[in-house]
Length: 75
Image 1 (cartoon, helix red, strand yellow):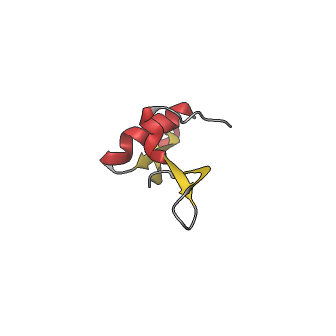
Image 2: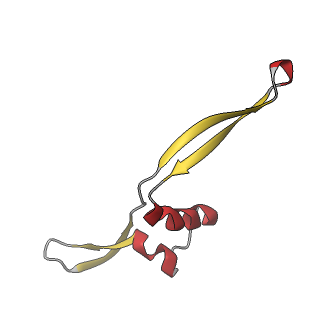
């Protein structure tokens, strides 16, 4: 899958690779912010009529929340 990360919101994800002397090599590396993925079982009703499903919650710091949300929307 190809994702275009050239906009300003994704700029903090892209870091230039430098050699041992500190000169840019022309390569880039992408660093994703830290996040935790939690799964939850969500249910409704009781007994034989109980309906359950799994929901996933992504937790991250407020500083990285907007960037991670934009990245997930692009995916």
